[in-house]
Image (tube, rainbow, N blue to C red; front, side):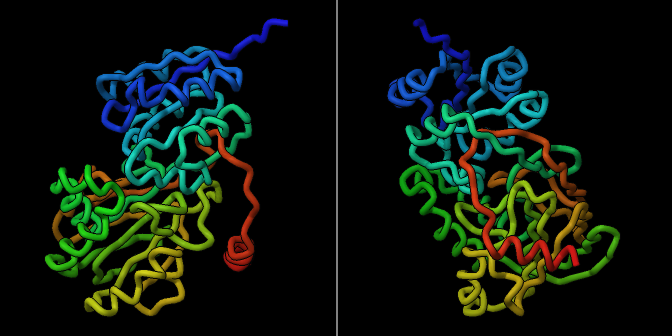
Length: 309
């Protein structure tokens, strides 16, 4: 009996390891899983989105990092079926949030297994993003990270700590106004982050109970602190324990207005994209993506119960 293969369209970023020679084993794995794969490398964001919108009934697979996924998001929102993800970028925080393996062959197996998960999107001034939008220290880290192109190519995600140290030495606290679901607060801080997903910044965690399908944004801001206090906060930033610390405030939100005394760059999933003031909202269940099944952690269940009480 002849197997009927399902059409699939693999779209890769030329700058994220998407060469045909690199992906030959992945293509073979996808074919073994029942897909008939056409591979394209769009020349621009517009070309990427056009390929997605013109995909017909084919399963769309995005090969790239978080920047590529954000560029594809407007077109992915028009799909009425799950899309696949091959994490070929530097940080791959969306894949991390979804539990998709970083090994491309294992990620291909997730796609062919056919299990999907409906996830939320963040909107910043109406433009979709997956992981986090932030102002302050993180934006300066991005500027430092991108400015050291050779070092970034050599070290990959390991370049983030060096960029963070360089940015911290130059950074100064700033005044901001937050309106969180109608509640206004004026603060002085070193960073504000509004997250949709669980992970950001190459493996940092927004909150230990955050998930990309829980229908909530997480908002945190860091109060001004010295070097050793910031150093002591690294485990909390890494594992999502900020709400347990005195140096941070963490809130749940559906809508956040963020203003600063003077316009500041906004870091959106590792790329500088816009300046304050901005409005950030949650779009629940906006997309469906192939992802492994997950168990709800006890910390998430407890946090959801506390917040609903």
